[in-house]
Length: 586
Image (tube, rainbow, N blue to C red; front, side, top):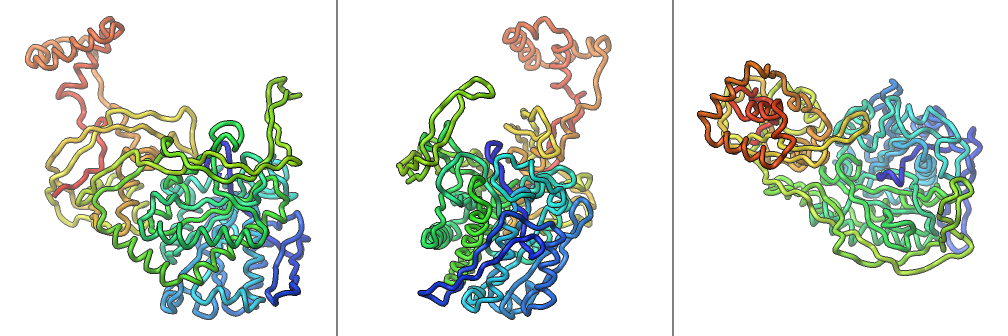
């Protein structure tokens, strides 16, 4: 899903008009109903909405509401299912229930989750045994999140994928990948989803996808929020209670599942790494909100019905754990929120620790290299008639690339309203100054950064950002915004406002105006001024000479030398490369 080598997403569903069947088969040894999906088609968005509308009209405990608009103006819906505890966040929380949030169709070319969620709702409503899974949990389902992408139906854009016959397209109406938009929030879809999740505050966020990548025996790959990034209480719940039981549930029902992975080399047998979900992704974003994120990544080369059924079972497994451990989940989240408010140092820019190598049982297929009939060059080929069960290298430990001390607050000039609006959307506590106030602040200047060569999700993303810091006194003006620390949103705020963080507002280009120098000089005018500056500042003269000695090309470039002096003189505009958001120290 998240990497260029392996994309993911979801969309799809089932209705009678789509020709898909729900089969209810009672086993001879148990009254437990085994619900299964059959078919290789998935309904259009309109059919999906109609199916949920029928539930809302005819079945108690169900509610369908609109939570916002897609970029193309289409409504985005939320379906709420509980066992009679109400249909609002307040009523559900008052009943002592936790909330499972399921987002389908973020990548509509991957429709497994929409059909699986329809199957889940039907099973919960028609089976008392399944409905018992809602004793301590309410379910919120976004039937199709990327509506405009779902409406671009075709049968060709997912060339790697086995079924269904037709599906949607990955990008939305603005050609944005919505699973890269959780920090920059460029799409109206994202605004709608974040607003709704802030209202409901789910305990576990579940998103459905289909995974590209290597061939293997597994029908499902499980991606969770990387445990190293979670508060210890949530990490313990996820690693010791949730994930092991998800694997056990899937194994008992015959659905092979492995961790979501990226390959080291050409085949999995040569070694795998886990995926580090940055905050641009849903699971990384939700980690900053003290939530566990889960992604189902069904395998693209398995039959569509098998993928839907595996997704359905993983949803049931997650509900089962939430039903068995409701108080433990509540306590883990409460502990995580309290810890977030007491944050001293934030760790970010996580990366895989390649020095820490574990091993993993792997059920794959033999692969070899042959000559391509297309290119005449070597190509890889998997042999499904030769299954393998081996132990392979596995790297899933991470290290933070950056550790940042938490300030007392951040001060944002009111001019940067796009940033302030997004903080408000995330319900970050802010204070609008009603009178001038003097602060001791740290001011950062951008000393270096790299930028992608081509647009990435509608923006030119910056990376490898470095800064210098100075201590200043600054007067906040009436209307400027203070973002005080000491809240559960602190980690999110630091990821957004610290310019060196990989998914910060600076990285996504919200502050690009400060990277442009506005005033310049005429060389024939500045020559005499530069001479006086060098005569009065021996340090500047020494720095200029050192640069001449270091760089022969610089020594032969008169303009470059004048610019060197200009940018170290009082004549340089103070706002150039100065990051506008200040870290308040006192």
